[in-house]
Amino acid sequence: MSQETLRQMDLQWEERLNQSMRSMEQRFMEQLQEQKQIQRALEEKLHSMTQGHMGADETPTAPRVSTRGSCSAVEPNEYSGQYELLVDGDPPRIVAVGRVLEGGETIHGVAILPQHVRVTIDEVRDPQAQVPVPTPEINFVGEAIGTFIAWPRALIMSHIATPQV
Image (tube, rainbow, N blue to C red; front, side, top):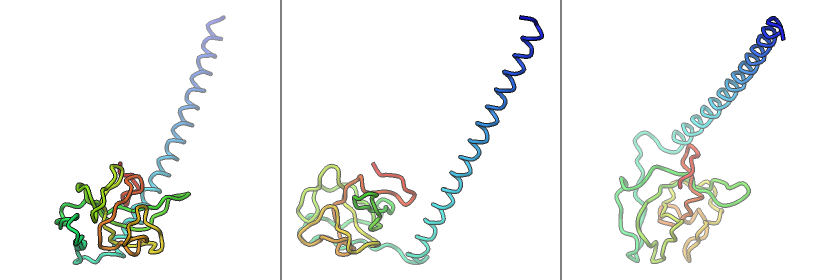
């Protein structure tokens, strides 16, 4: 091959490489814009949820506790942040917002399974939804507000949709 042919091939290869890089950069920028839009939408949702449900001088109250002695009173600073509580379905759906309280082995005298955590419901989204772990006193989300209930870890997500594991 002549020197000129090699130079032509090299230029063609370089042009293809540049086109490929421009195409990849364009796709990357489009994906970045899409992610920014998703982030803005999530931030707006979080903002509207926090503005619509709690005034500036309101503070969460501690839940009522078991009279059976299986749930001791806890201070609000022992709670994690608020989480969306889901029920299993296709797709899973948010039925309440609540707080997780780590620790403790029983709720109302019943052992908590390892894959469950103790939660207290602060806000009901669907009062008629069945709770994932019913008790003799609580079958529906609307009946569980302000008390402790077991909830599967796999059905708990933070407000920014990060699964709790």
